[in-house]
Image (cartoon, rainbow, N blue to C red; front, top):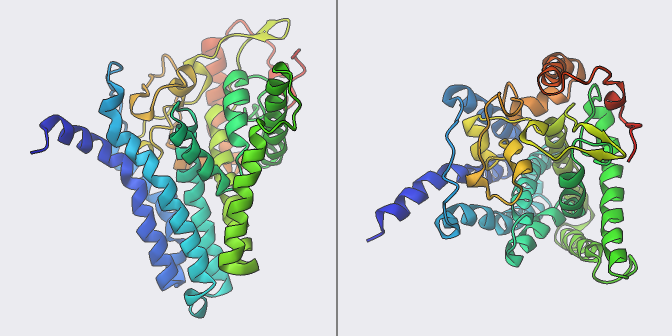
Length: 379
């Protein structure tokens, strides 16, 4: 008989496995075509937004004394997604370039793989983010595999070595500046993330007396994994399969950077002089306690606590009230759509940023240096 405590833990973890429901939805789009090819983005963006509206906020916090062995069901959710996504992605490439080619038009195939990119970004990169923070090598490898499937392997180096250290400062390309629209942010961050990640790894090797081309540079592993993924797509689906793979990867990266844009928009750490900034606090990330979207995103929206305590697994991330961290009016599915329309985004978020400044930094009267995309404050 299964112990009651184990059953209880399974039941608490089960809602976070809702991402697995996206797999049969992808298969429906592949088998039936027509309007069903847009089901993946519809469900990911709108179904969970509707659920948020009905289910509301989840404000309770897990016990921080919970042991690692009591989190096995949560850990299993993140580990199972990598092989599931791998099989789904390459099966889809095989199907649409083979058996499915007879009933799927070119437009249907492109839209279907747009949806695939939505889930490899919304779920896949998000799960890789959880896995890359863990000490276990097998978990980190799964995270690397997920990033390689969307050709964004350097995100691990950028996130761990740059973003967490420099968030809310000019040295972090991922922090969206006040009044910076997403369409300006996106091309800036694509270049900035790669360059900052490579420089960070090069600097780490230099401190050990090694050149950047030393085989210990993880970029060689990144390029090898990405090369394998690209070659497999080419072998399975030919040039069309390779093109579809690259297309879904682009969509996934776009989804990731939309989330990055939302998470820290307009929030900055106070400059203390001499190129130094205050320590990262919960107030330097936007928080969202919406229940359903946190199920889908394994508590990523409790981002304030993630930056405050990066080593916490997702079920232990704490929620903060408005007294301790700025709050988003809606979950990420709604906010990322709003980010695509800068006038709407500014109308919703700029007043919140100004209130945040008055609340936490009333002594700062000139915000012009912080408002610029390239902050002139000393590095």
